[in-house]
Amino acid sequence: MSGKKRFLLRLDPELYAVLEKWAADELRSVNAQIEFLLKSAAVRAGRWKGRDKSTKDES
Image (tube, rainbow, N blue to C red):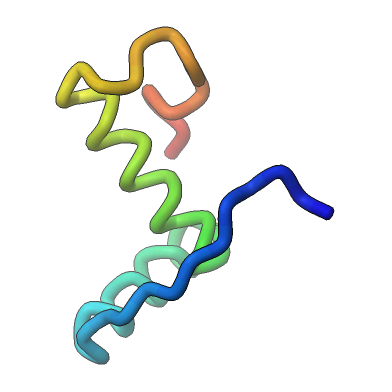
């Protein structure tokens, strides 16, 4: 079993469509895209210090 936390996320259908297209453009799944965006935001906010360097420029 994966060490990742699972939870239900409800999104506006229009937002999901945007995320789906964005993820496809970057060759990621929607789940991976959401995780990437959340990690990037946490790094920019100074809340994800030194945990994962791969989120800085993973385009």
